Length: 287
Image 1: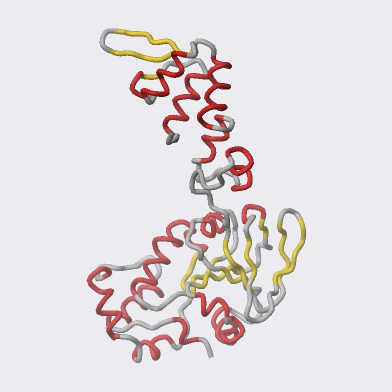
Image 2 (image 1 turned 120 degrees about the vertical axis):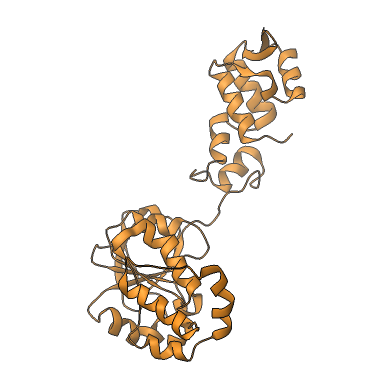
């Protein structure tokens, strides 16, 4: 039997002493529960509702025969913010795929200089060997110093090859800054939620096209406010002159009204893109 979140919620209401509409339970389940002496029906005009006769017995019967786990835990399974794991599902239901549970929450981090951080209260040093990066799964327990600048890198090739872009980052952000590079892949809101919990400065490094700027505006700036900025290399206009016209033409109908008047520098980039009718990929900064 398919056990939905709504059905579990209604069963919990019954075990808490509430009534539920007769239509809220599957007919076969309701008949079984009444046959077992666990439910009774009350009518008020044309409306019928179910009530538990013995709340504890009802809870025990439903958990044993239908849900195969504690009712409260089964409801948590459907919660996107739940800490229920596949191991817990397998242990309680025998089926780790009873519902969609994210087995790998979190986001990748990288750096080209050692940065000390706290993970679950333990100090760790982030300094992956060239060609690799670290993945932070317990991101809610990941802490960094407030002076570390977080740089979000859109494309994985740039994220993997940081050392080949080091000069550009030092020139544009500052050689004295400690930079922690992060990626929002796999796609989720974990990275953004982590950033929202911090006071740190965030710099977005993405493609220099209308779609890339829109990602920054809609997925980062509106949540982080003035802590967020867009990385604009000093030689960008020269590079845009030799960029891609095809992609600009593809994106323009969707983003023709894109504006960012609150950030003058970013509005200047939008104007340049529209002036030259071209885009430029961030991979061009890998040397």
